[in-house]
Image (cartoon, rainbow, N blue to C red):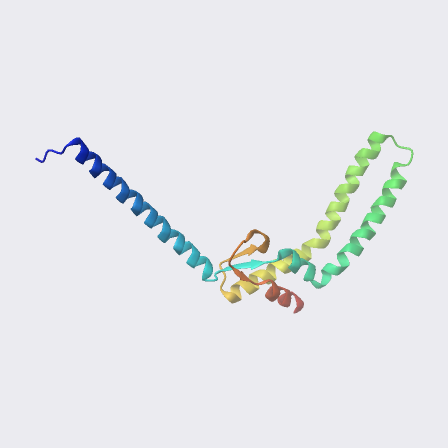
Length: 155
């Protein structure tokens, strides 16, 4: 068997460590290259969800309907809390806030469902496997916002 000196053992150990580190770096670079090429292959869509929601034809009437509901709830609050204690007013105020939140959800639900359906339809048509909100994407992806807005206009 070959007898190696301490100096030769150190050199061989360092050489093995360098080869190992080099192979790990090469592997990491090839993997990140695959991720970048997968993202650029456009199977990821991005959308300005808020813009699509605002573009829905019924979205323009929501503020007016919410204001009317708010005025009605405010009037109800003033009538039912006249002469009541601060504790009772606070409790009824919470109930009124819940009613207002329910009204907002009730008005927004059909719009949200329509936008979600339009996103799915456009994504299926374009062969996209993932659609992400544009606000969380720094780079890449196929913007489908205008296609979704067009789809919403067809209804």
